[in-house]
Length: 463
Image (cartoon, rainbow, N blue to C red):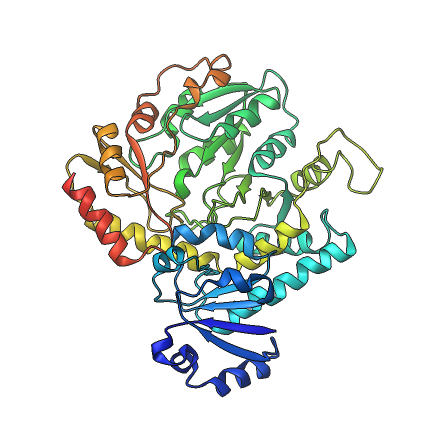
C-alpha cells in the first residue's frame, strides 16, 4: 500500500508535525496491524493528484471537510483511492486546486480513520464475492445494532423510510373506513403511506412552538373510526405525548412515530426516539443524520406480533423462501447499505452532538425581531434548523447575496398538495400554512466551523 501525504512542503514533512517523525508513524501502523506502508511521499497542497489517481491507495489530507466535500464521501467507499482528511485545513483551497477532501466523521484518532477505509472496503468486497446482496448477515447485524441504539426489542430493515411507514400501517390490518391522523407539516410520504394502505386520511394542524402535531387538534378529530395516529418528529425534535398516549391506550389507537428525521433524538421525558409510540419508522436517506449511500429504512417496535408481521410483509409475505403466507411487498435493506450504516452508527452521537452545539449557538446568538426561533429541546438531533422569517423572498435574496445556503422543510402543507387534496376533508391549518410560507432552513452541517457560524449569524442579525 502506498501512502501519499499532501502537506506544506515548507514544513518539510507533515507527518513530522502529526506523529513526531516518519519512523514512528510506520511503527504505529504496523503494530496496529491495520496496513503496511511501503513508501511515503510528500507533495505540496497544490499538486494535481489526478495524475496519480489510479496508482494511489490512500491520500492523507491535513484537512477538514465542509458541506462541499460531502459528495466525495459518498464516492470514496467504492472508488480508488481512499482519502483521509485531518482537521485544521482549508478545504476551499483544496477544492480550488483540484484536491480531494474526505473527512469520515468526527473521529479523533488516525487509527479509526484507517479502520473505516480498510475494514469497510473489505466487507463490501466480501459481499460482492459471495453475491450476498439481499438481507444477509450485515443486515441482521445492523438490525441488532439499531434496536440496541433505539432501545427497542425488534428492528426490521427495509428499502426506505417511505416503505417503513407503509409497512407499519399495513401490519395493523386496517380497513377502508378506518382513519389515520397525521400532521399537516410533514413530508408527503407520511400521507402517501396512509392512502396507499386504503385508509381514510385525517390531518391535524401543528403548533408554532416546535412544529410538532397539535395534540388538542388531534384529540378533537379522534372518533370511533380512528385506528392510528402518526406523529412526526419534524426536523429531529421528539415532543412529549403523555396526554395523547393515555387517550390512545384507552381507545386502543396505535401511535406511530415517524422518526425519519430524529435518529438519536431524546424527548424531555428522557425517552429515545423509537420508543415514544407503538411503532417507529426511520429513514436512512443520504441526507439524514444517519445516512446510507443510497435509500434505506427501518421499522422498530417492542411488539413481537407486529415485528413478525412486518418481517413477512417486507418479503412478499414470506419469512422462508417460497412460503408466502400473506400478500406483501418487496422492501429489503441492501447489504452494502447495512455495511455503511453499521459503521456510521458508531459515530451518530458525535454527529448529533455537533449539531446540538451548532443549534445552541444559533439559539443564543440570533437576535432579530424579523426572525422567529422555535423552542426545540436541547436533546433534539437537529436534522434541520428552521427559522420563521417575515418577508421570506427578500431574506432568501439576501442570503444568496452572501452565498449562505438555505432550504425549505417544507414549502407546502400536506392538505394543499394536488395529490392529497381530494383525500382531505379537514380545512383549518393556520400554523402549518404559516410555517410553509415563512420557514427557512439555515445551515446545520456538523462540520461548520465557528467563523462560518459567526458569519451566518452576523448576516441574519443584520437583515
